Amino acid sequence: MASTILRKSQLGRRLIHSSFSLSHKTLQNFTSLFHERTFQQRDDPFHASYKTSQWVGTRANFSTQSLSLNEPVVSVDWLHANLQEPDLKVLDASWYMPDEQRNPIQEYQVAHIPGALFFDVDGIADRSTNLPHMLPSEKAFAAAVSALGIENKDGLVVYDGKGIFSAARVWWMFQVFGHEKVWVLDGGLPRWRTSGYDVESSASGDAILKASASSEAIEKVYQGQTVGPITFQTKFQPHLVWSLEQVGCYFLAIVVLLKKLQR
Image (cartoon, rainbow, N blue to C red; front, side, top):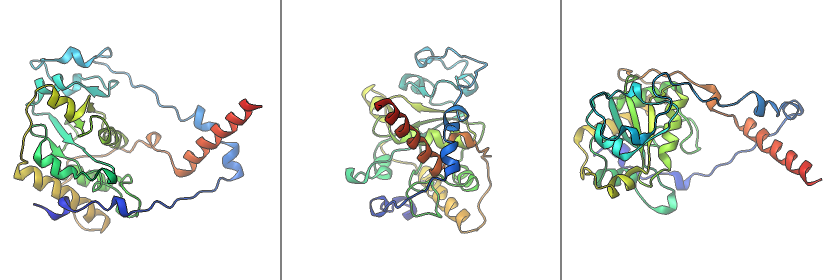
């Protein structure tokens, strides 16, 4: 069992120290955050009116290409019906707050959706900062995901052990790096189990090795070492990420608007 995966999370021992100052020019331009950086819904050429319930039991015409990119979730019934399809991969992206005293990799080994890979939220992160689970570089993310055996052609369904918590974060990470064929499992592992679907009670050696290799690959990137073959190509989407200054600007704009409303 790889020590890099079973290591105790250091999240609870990390302190976040951040500060920022806003220039006069930044204050003048904060309104651009509301007018220029909008998130537009993508057009889907296949099934724009897709609902997860429409896909229950549908396997004959399965293709992740036919799933709507405008719908961020799939149902447990849909996943169960299509779980064995070769171009679909399932990721257990469970992560818990430190005070919950839960170990996601250990829980993954006890029970997970059959065939699911473990995505280490703490491990697949920026190793050049002391801040917890910051977004990694493109190169680091590509190396980590490739080590998991994920390719650009794959459709991904992400879930977590709380229902919907950290899975949404991992969905966003793939979106940031240009992979649109990713969906969150509605209700996560709890709904899967209450729906009566089977779970695997032990992780395969291959799954553990891949999780370990993923953590090691991202560490190598930040140490400037050579990594294995890259099967996942990234395409960074800057409109899905805000800088610290931009976030500060956004909240300052809210404060200004609230003060105006109080007058």
